[in-house]
Image 1 (cartoon, rainbow, N blue to C red):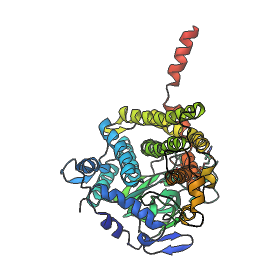
Image 2: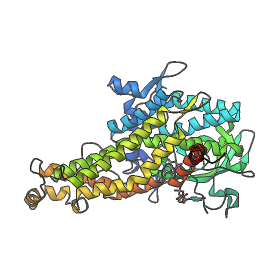
Image 3: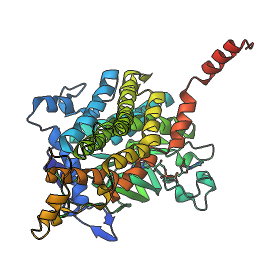
Length: 478
Ligand SMILES: Cc1cc2nc3c(=O)[nH]c(=O)nc-3n(C[C@H](O)[C@H](O)[C@H](O)COP(=O)(O)OP(=O)(O)OC[C@H]3O[C@@H](n4cnc5c(N)ncnc54)[C@H](O)[C@@H]3O)c2cc1C
């Protein structure tokens, strides 16, 4: 089939999948007021590969490495730092061009790239072939994937085999000649209800005796036994909001229940090799955090822009304490950008696969998460209380009160009241809304908690070198 159109992607979702949201089963998710937004957000990614603009098409479409057929560039396994830099560029441009993150080929291929690395390390040719055949299937059919890693986990202090029941971590319950049967639930899975394929990776390191939990595979979203239970999202713009011309972009997360799901052996990438579960979880986390730090850059650029614009609309751009805060805001954004670029430029090679630099990637993700709330605070501070109390678009449109708003809600004279109100509403969405609270939590947890990043920084940082240098300086013998 090759590259699909947005409509072909949407049509593919009418496949009998079992999706629930707000207590109701949805037959056609493309028509649902919340899930439809997710489908449109992902479909926008399919527009990029069809773009009439050659520069855009060349970025998102690449020749198949063997046949030369046009395929989505996300399906190119990174072999060089240029491949990694292209991934960053694609992710960032997709946000700039569509207003949202189509996000699916990114996280799916993060999983698959990790599976390739680990299959190589295990020297299991069968898994390598399975991963390769599955990649070819994705390439040929231009499929949207989600990455299902996070298990529901029950009591966090207990290992999978020591929990109250065995299903808090996804595991194998049966093995037959044809395949495996799995049971469990993955949670918070971004864009899951609108994916064609689910790629499963273990959520953590498994230990001896936990081989059934060391399992990785791919399964179609409409496979028997799979149910999606989605979070309620925001849906389309309401008539009360000032907004630009772009539609709302959002990707709904879901809990995916695997109730005795059959997976043929050809689609299994790990089954029982608990010794390699840590490498798989670790490598996935590195690829995925690299995706994260790439997409966070344009996200925080828009927010920083709100601070700059609000400072100007309020007539405070040249005031010293405001400039001091703008310097902190710019420093936050540019540190993230510099680290994201450095992670791509200093890959670690596993065989012929380029893995983004794990130390720098985790430092970047930690920098982003650890300082995000402070960044938000600065934007809130510069913008003023109006971002919490601003009248809405319906007030502006009501002739009985319009003049009051026009007269009293102006700012610096060179800007219109309407433009100031539009910017207030944009800022509000980013730092004072249900959506912004969602992003504050997402920043802390999505792509792993800060403790997970610190663990990887400690594993990767040259602590011995630091110690040796200190001992040398102190004149202490090794
Ligand atoms: C919006 C959003 C989108 C996401 N998208 C995806 C996705 O597409 N795919 C996917 O697989 N996952 C996804 N995630 C999940 C994300 O990776 C997890 O939220 C993250 O790994 C934290 O896990 P948790 O939410 O279960 O929190 P918890 O594990 O409950 O963590 C809470 C706190 O407890 C600490 N903690 C947990 N266990 C231990 C322990 N054993 N010892 C010491 N401290 C511990 C953590 O460090 C953290 O500080 C998403 C999350 C969000 C919020």
